[in-house]
Image (tube, helix red, strand yellow):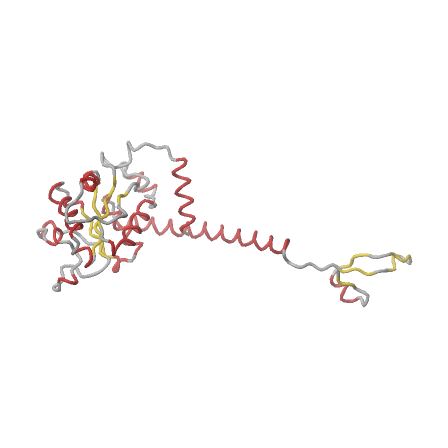
Length: 263
């Protein structure tokens, strides 16, 4: 399935010549900055991949003109940061990001650079209302500090500014993804979810048809090139009273004839 997504992605990148003028970035370079720790790298990669390959439904975009078709690009860095201070490069990427998605777990809650990134986005850039906590483990506001999943700058927000956490364990991957998209563009979750399920059913039908056709083609090739074939002949038959030489007969006649040869 992922191979088909990749082919679709490269096809769109090859023939997509649209500009960024109406892509909803509003002057930013990225839709979101993903903050995470090395133990949650698989979740950061999953988020970036699925957000960039999520297609906002045409009907939803027709009703809300400022929505883009794709959520590209989303920023995440592969290498871990060394030290407790943010580098100038990361600060620049944070400034150029419209939203921040924080992969929340006990590991990230205690990681210095995750806290620094959130603090910089919240306090220096004044975008605390654009932080999306994506919970993958631990407990929200736990009594046991070892189980706490939220970084300190998020935990310290006043009650009137508390952020809604999207817990993948509660929603599941698909609903959590659509929840994030809903938060990014202020679109009702139920509208996006209904369209998402329709698109998934449509995709399954298309992929199922493709797989069925490929299976038929492969079976046909196997039967034509690899399957052993038998032809049956008799060395003499009576044709209207005239003896005739070797002639091919079908399977039913071969079973009846004692003189049938298998070649």
